Length: 232
Image 1 (cartoon, rainbow, N blue to C red):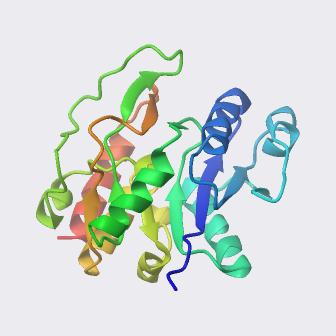
Image 2 (image 1 turned 180 degrees about the horizontal axis):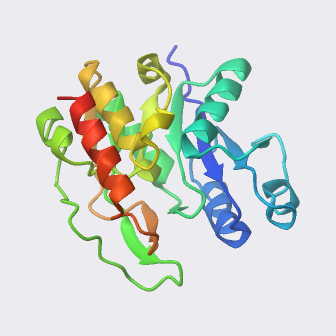
Image 3 (image 1 turned 135 degrees about the horizontal axis):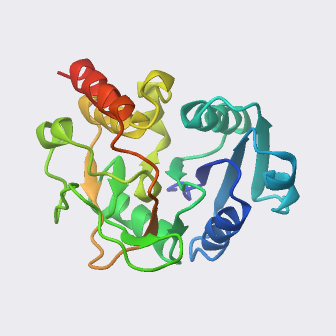
């Protein structure tokens, strides 16, 4: 008998409770219901703490930790997922992005139909105030273009990704490349031979929230070069 997929959802969070509530609401509205959400609060201030704004239940677990960055936050979720056991898939949703109701259902269908290990989709882009946004300089493809293209630039948005638990064999997120830690993870998954496929949907299954937060900084450029060298 085929095992019913059980999805662990990883959501790092820091100090933006109103955006967090939107993201959690999107998870709660999923058509697919066999999931558990792990919210990792990365040292939010007292009034902004996740456990002061979100009610925990059997499907929502909040993990508090001192501030140490998004990679450590996701890795802390991995620790709890492994300790709890029984999960077949991992999904990611950052605490400012919003899943639409069919997101998990579609991703699991793609993994089954295309016999893939990891899937992602192209999101709808909006600013925090929900006005439309347009990403700059990030290519969009109609299907996964392969490892060599992924080596050149990250085009996979983390909140769109769902992968089988087996992909965790490549290790945890690398805290030394914070801000591009997701790109590094996808490259390791691809290089390990796991099959990646893009969603079959012709319309977005999530909203990616765009912010003016200085992603073009010299620090990010340095990390970009570090990832390129790591995977050359």
